[in-house]
Image (cartoon, rainbow, N blue to C red; front, side):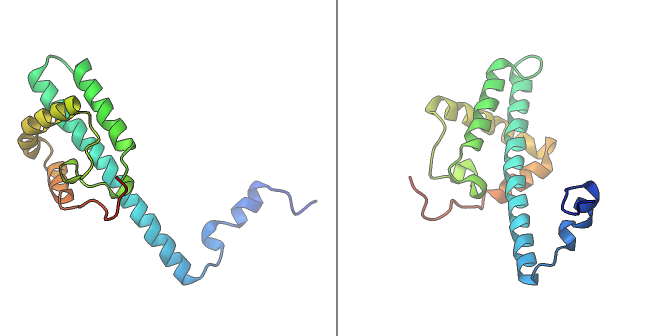
Length: 145
């Protein structure tokens, strides 16, 4: 039998934690993984926050579920988050030096946030608190405008 073939037994025999790595590499890898996880959690939380705000606004101003206009705004906001030049270092939009929303969409989002912001404290207190804390985040220094 050929011992170089790739079998399930061979793969199970060499699990990532079985491979000896220097302690510094393990610590660095752990810090990077933790940082990436926090950053992706941050962007996911930003998405949940804007979605919750749009849902509150639409529920109180329009009939039924999410209307096409509000769904379009939510889709636009998600595209803007996907394309944010700061990526994982993204500050809250209020603290961002780059205004990536078109002027008419920016006005729509301001209107939604002015209405839904205070109501978020009652309906989504944890998201509200985290968004408030994220508001202390500043844009990275030395970005290319």
